[in-house]
Image (cartoon, rainbow, N blue to C red; front, side, top):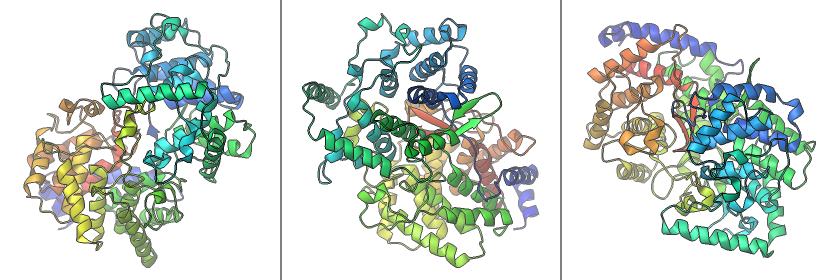
Length: 634
């Protein structure tokens, strides 16, 4: 079908113009090297912790901390608090960290903004009700008692591979952030700083503070509290088996896991904690390891004439692959110079060394992509699958090399299949849920189990590339997805908000692998998408659906979530339905004059219920993909 005829039959001539504008916008954002890269916006806590780190290290003089002051005050809401995600009404731990950072920066507690924040905090129970990581950062300054921090025994570094638990049972992000904290929690340092207290944030006064660890309602949670008390007693009497050896192993692990670029795991928490841990045991800020790490953190910052803040991570590989897919699916020629440059850049970022994933995956050969510019220890299944699909769509001068790379990386993805049949992000069978019950794990993000969205992504990759694999691999994945389908017909989204994201990816994966979209369980999924469409024709879902299932599929319409719903409907054979047409009209009507889309909502997920991300390109490449597939494939 010709482009013009497709436009006419779609009944929306404006779609062609919308696509062209979106393509031009994204093409204008490509970096000369061939990649795309946009901001990952999160809450203010990491920027606040950046202030704390430089206060401790004594390295604040050369950092734009005055710009952080402006940033933090600008991010404060009218109610006095700071938000976990856009429009959430404010969150306690986020607000406490922002308040404390402002105090360290010299802001008087008597200022109206600080008074409003203090009222917000006290109304929600004060410091003792915050998350463990907030308390830990306060403890570094003596603003919270170390007695109220869970014990992290260093001897976990010495546990043998055959033991029920090693550090490799923790998710990659938890592992890379926790190992350096072993050094910190062993010494329990307290650094003095002007205004380094928050006594005014204790309900009933600090002397009366309840320092007990929350145990939850489970028997296991209560058992872990008793274990923590035992560990604290052992510390007090000096009985910490293998302490010196364990701390040495932890130090060596941190140093070995630093990238040549200075990164640790490609995420700011691991970087901040690694620098803090090494400083705690005597590394000077002038040490080359520290210098590289500090520079890397600075490089994650976004600085303007007025403000400075940190991104939690950076996403050039992810942004590039998804943007290339959008441009291809919307009609840009596969050999367009921009796509050729993107494809060749992606191949240049291929990781061919072993990483932490190989501890539990004894058969896989290296060959994957990470999210960031540098993160060789932690390639991930999601990025690798998306890059493979992008490479499938682009035409490169050396197609033979491209195919060789695609085959190599596909084999790595297949080797990462978990016992339950699905795929996780960074490891296989990283599903020891007991870890989420320990006091330290109050974010409930200690593990990296296989999920529906990642499993759907891998199936879509296998289907779109027509890769021949053992049918048993596919059947196990399909059975996993069937068991994970919610009663309403949707699927949970671990890495995007939330059921809309999961449902869209699973539908695309199952159909791509050859499942008839008239199968009853797929039709239940598309019917669910139809049922949650908003009156304005778009789709939206609040981050709060992670903590309240009644909110699944409910929220203000956003371009990214509307695009995900459309992609699900198109895969499900309903791309020409009235719901799809109205969704397309929503995207056309919401496009900005420059070809972009507006979206303040956070639709990316770090830790469900606790950490969310606004990917600034999601609002642009996902709508373009949906519009392109509507026009050419629906």
